[in-house]
Image 1 (spheres, rainbow, N blue to C red):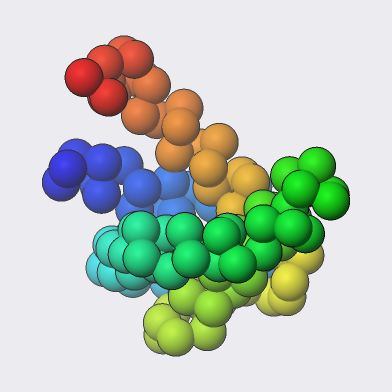
Image 2 (image 1 turned 135 degrees about the vertical axis):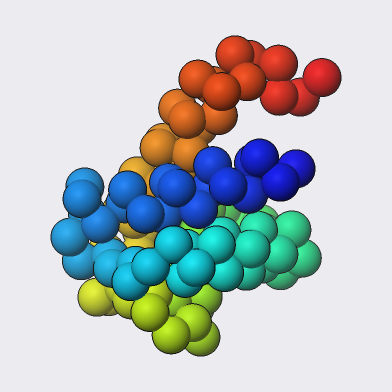
Length: 115
């Protein structure tokens, strides 16, 4: 679990190189942001997904991107040193962050993360 946290923090550090409108000041900030994002995605995101299920079904699942972007933007507004320029930057940031995190996890764990 600590290794996954470290991978997510490194993915956050790499994110500004791909999405310049997302900024992370330091490794400590990335660790804090990865921790808060993990907690938010574990505790708040399932409730929001359940509450917005009709909109998600109506948009064929695309509303999940809106939820992810809003949560990413919310975390950036609470943490000093982690900045997102706006909503669409947050949506793009979540997509790229997820891809970087997934690729790094696949390299480290080799597809054995779930077992």
